[in-house]
Length: 164
Image 1: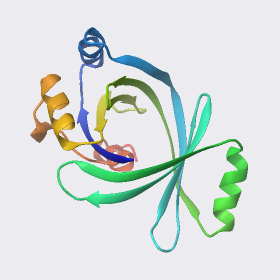
Image 2: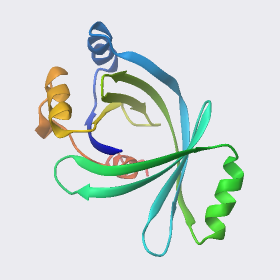
Image 3: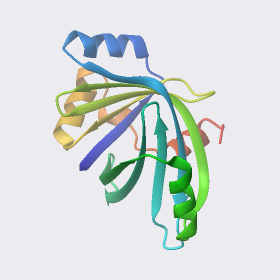
């Protein structure tokens, strides 16, 4: 699936959630997420994520380098987390980073709103859709401008706040 995403930092989480719920956004997930990140010698990266009821392996293929993060995202749900970690290491992927965060996930039509809280970092929201126009419209709906968004990865967010 193609995904276009931006992040907005230092938000008023409750106010933004209220706006979204008022127009019908559905709460999908409210839980802690843990993830391990792997890469191989060719620079390909895979994320394994544990989230309450399921494990997900994700590979993202970068499509653009503009102001929004644009990727093709491929995901597989799997059962045995430890077994897949060992499998990746057996085929020359090395774990280079681990992370945990609290996520509140809302969905409205084709757009996902991930409200994330990392230790020592204020709440931020990630707006993700399958097209640029919707991302830009939702940024405006939440009373922000595109120049107030960014495309930092979680690791870069931690570095930005000096907690990496």
